[in-house]
Amino acid sequence: MAHTPRKRFGQNFLIDDQVINQIISTIAPKTDDNIIEIGPGKGALTFPIAEYLDHLNVIEIDHDLISILNAQNNNNITIFNADALTFDFNHFPTNMRIIGNLPYNISSPLLFHLLNYRENIIDMTFMLQKEVVDRIVATPGTKTYGRISVVIQAFFDTELMFIVPRKSFNPQPKIESAILYLKTKSVPLVQNLKPLEEIVKLAFSQRRKTLKNCLKSVLDQSQTQIDLSQRAEMLSLDNFVTLMNDYEKQYRN
Ligand code: SAM
Picture 1 (cartoon, rainbow, N blue to C red):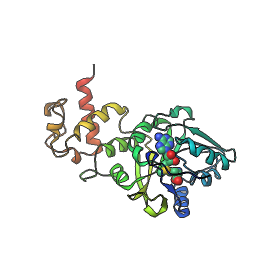
Picture 2 (tube, rainbow, N blue to C red):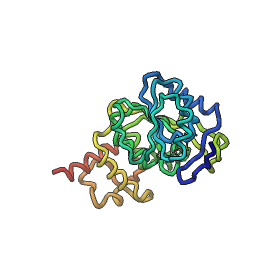
Picture 3 (spheres, rainbow, N blue to C red):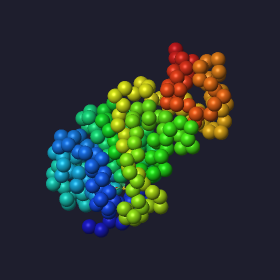
Picture 4 (tube, protein in one colour):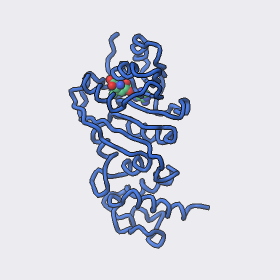
């Protein structure tokens, strides 16, 4: 069955067996795992991993790939022809392990969508643009440390597992990729996503300016112990939690 890769769906199909095996080793699937794959494509990862599992759920947006997937399905794969960005993951049991070679154009919004289901997620293993992985795992004081590092690390332990060269795909993407492993923290740094997102977004809204400047519409120095003469990139995760608590105190009630 011929299928022309679609740019708008970020279709770069894996063609490298060694990389596929490395991804499966990272996931280390167990028979009764509740694995959900986002964007199975033509099944490069789907069929090898399904061999380890009693059952696998996959979500694929491109209707034309569904028949390709169905042709090889040994009945242990349930295929949802849907958009993962709006998909209600409460549909699945509460011990989700989510995986996927993600379409690069939706990787950030998809991660933010999945954050809503974090309490039901054990871990996530994703292929992403290396540049996005670098930002997610970044530490304070570095250029890549920003909004996505703080928000994701508040809820997940993060690790860049390995880099995947462009030649492992067809068609080849313009940029390097990497495998990111996210393990849900047993105790998240904060309970609520919304106030953290709000304060982090404001704090990083003008990277070169001080926090005093970025936060002037919501918080002044008398309302927090965090030194607002610093720039956001200098703040540790714990500092951001303090800042969020001080911000919330102003707006509670
Ligand atoms: N997993 C396959 C592989 O490794 O060869 C395909 C990976 S390709 C980078 C991304 C896949 O995600 C494509 O199959 C694409 O159609 C699918 N996709 C794109 N946007 C999607 C969305 N919003 N929801 C679900 N699947 C999507």
